[in-house]
Amino acid sequence: MFRYLEVEFDNTALAPDVSITYWLDPLNVDNPGPGKQISLRPALGAARYRAFSEGGATCQKLLIQIQARASTNAGVIRGIKLAADTVPGTLPSNQAGGV
Image (tube, rainbow, N blue to C red; front, side, top):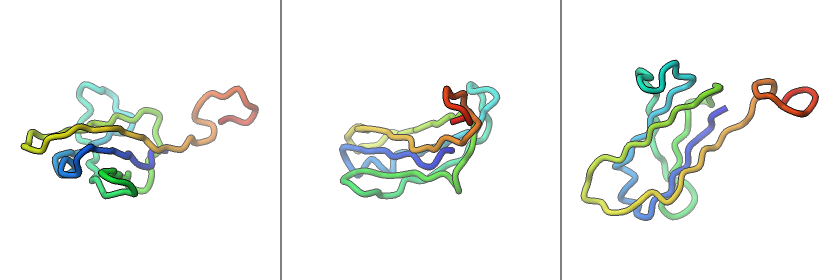
């Protein structure tokens, strides 16, 4: 289950220049259709932001697009972290009873 995406920049001015869109189980990743846009919100830590999915999202495939528009703000994305939970019975497991 997709919970949130965490993005860290080396410059806080970059956050407004970034947009994030995601698709749940897209049939065609080259032409996935309209996705769901999520907004970055400040998180604990310097230049760290989180983008939450709407109420959690269960899927088998998650496609995420991160776009940074051209601007005069200099900097880079330091890191990206995906927070998700496994749902019992959705992935193969070596343990009896599923994941």
